[in-house]
Length: 350
Image (cartoon, rainbow, N blue to C red; front, side):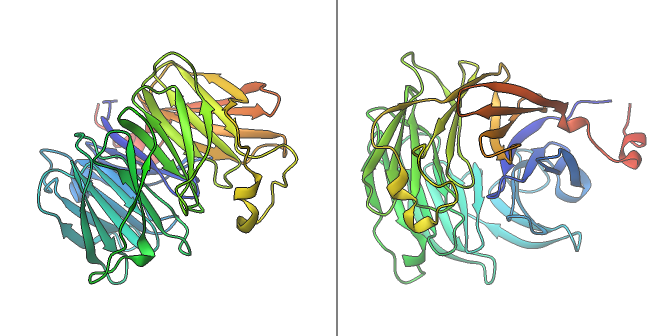
């Protein structure tokens, strides 16, 4: 069976579905238990550079890979229920480097520029933003419709711009706020599902800093290590209880984002008051050699035993459990690109 080149892997806001953009089309998988949900062939969508699914809906948003039959500066929306393309959005400039989507907004990312669209009904351009001087545009989008928030790399080295999207329209735009997050260039960032917390890491990779997106105030620091490292992924758990950070050191660090005395079921209103104010070290570490493409937290066996899934280069799936005492255990392993239904299996070319 021929190998399929993976161009990118994305996770939805609830971290229960991940999408894989390949030279042979798009594949959607359930995170836990691992299962192939849908596939869209190259004949229909061409080679795909980036893709994402709108929460757990039938809408798949993607852009073509360089050399695809579809231009790489155009976003397409595929309705997987109707099995047809329903929307096409061309943006001026170079290739699309990332796509972020929520129930209210679509963010199209290019080198040094991002475009903010109202989405999905109707879909219209609200604003285009010039971003930092680096060749890679780093950004994060919240999924909460009551607090839509966008963060992206700023012009000053180590800075981040934070913008409330509900204050942006085609005729009015709120000025973004600037956070001086690091002394070095931003490498990765992540926003929690509620949109109130932003985690950032620099190209040095030793410290992860957390900021309140409402006030831009620093919350605290997480110490990944003392040796420089290239960060691969930063991910909040859906309930904002944990933060996971993977790097080229072959480790996944998991940090606790709440005081041990806090109530895990607390409401969003009280969420910020429960965070620890001082620098923290990870509560658990997982050794994993393949490059991590994305991470997803999944329900654990109890309130004290949690689980995390790492989706890695080469199409490997790793599931681990971890406890607040630092104990970790491998729960599952698979090759997700080898999953398919019987019909697909027997029709693969040799």
